[in-house]
Amino acid sequence: EGALLAAPLAALLGHPSLNEFAGTANRLCDHLLRYPASLRPPERTLAQ
Image (cartoon, rainbow, N blue to C red):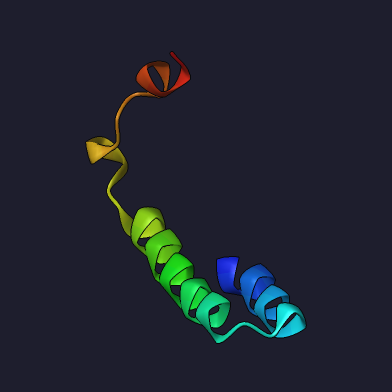
């Protein structure tokens, strides 16, 4: 879903580097979504 936002943004700005970044961000988001919830840090530690 991240690429749906980042790719059009890169196209509008016309920067190939941003298009590459969009692919990297999309892979990172996909990795985070697949990451087991049991291995994620508790929400409490993120809020502090």
